Length: 401
Image (cartoon, rainbow, N blue to C red):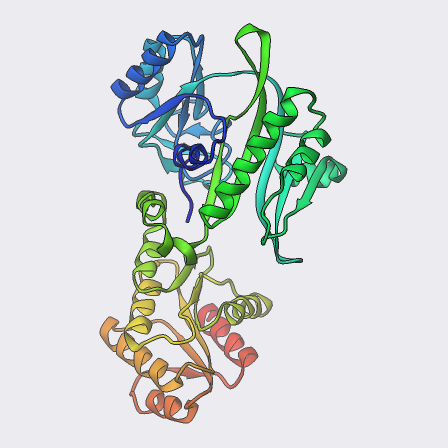
């Protein structure tokens, strides 16, 4: 689950991460009020940030023609005018696709005087099954660009999950970022807070880009997280009701929302051949083999190892809600799964929806003969696949005429 920047900063603040003061609002009046308080506190400028689940907001373009979803302002009235121009408008960035995202919330916070920018992230290194803290002096850039252009600029510190991030590791990274004096301890506190946010919130990713060395009163310097991105592990959300309440359904695809209600793993893609598969690995292989034989998958849909007939019927309804789908491939290997349950769900869903699209089914495994018999006796036009390759070729041929 993804959350907005302002929500990520709320979580980071719980664990002592230094952040610029600010607040979120849904109206121009609320934005102006927050800005007024910041100016009254002595801040010279404020920044207005569109809140959507996508990066590249500063370089994005609103469909209204306004350039940039992040604006620096010098007065509360300017904030009010910027908020009026942003709220209720669709922002298109490199990550949203051409459809863009509707901006319904704005984060208004103090604009900092930046002296240096860094990159910081905590994630799971699956190669060694341990947490990994990544940092770089190349802040404000996509980390993929840094990895391709200057991989030596990326610092990595592997963490023992039984001990957590140790203070000496935080100081080691701070020194590697060329910080000195009191900034070493300030950086260590921030690094430990970011790691604790990742651990305590069961996050899959915490990313601070940029982490900045900013100027404070009296020409002093401090470190501050000026942006924040947190992705949560869906499997752990049952432990965090407060975080689960942060879910913004307006930022999610409607079909993915519908799938989540039936505990189905669904991701919409750009193709025209729908897949219904049990198991993430088999789903990936199914999409690959469709592509191999000249087709284009319309979705990733994993019904899981123990799906019920109701879930299968729901999966069909979700698939058929995509107007781009021109054919369906069901690829089931029954280990825990009973193939006859899948077959019964397919028949029920096809009858309920009045299915007219080509449907190719490949069943193997537990109770497969009963499943094939259910399909054969259904009276429906169902194309049987003897193997993954055979089924993929048949559905591609059926869709392409």
